[in-house]
Length: 74
Image (cartoon, rainbow, N blue to C red; front, side, top):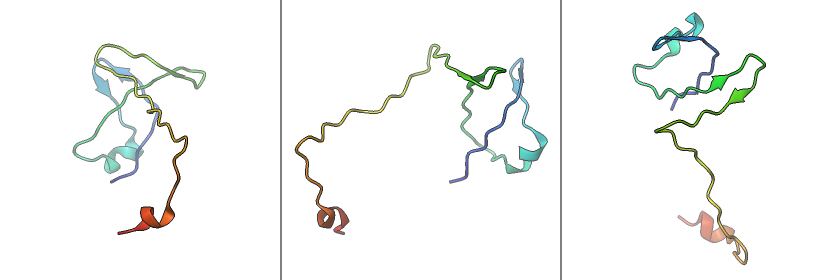
C-alpha cells in the first residue's frame, strides 16, 4: 500500500490539476476524495447525495476482561 498524497488545488470544470512534483508518484488507478478547503485553511463538509458520513461504532466493553495470552495465541 502506498502513502496518501495530499495537496491543495483548484478544480476547473471536471478537471483536477495535479501539481508537477506529484505527477511521477501518481498510480494508474486511485481513489479520489474531494474535501472543500476554504481560503482560511478550514475544511468544509458537504455531504451531498451519494456520500455517506462514516461514524465509529459504539462497543460496550463494560465487564470485558482482556486476556493477553489468548490474544497472542496463534
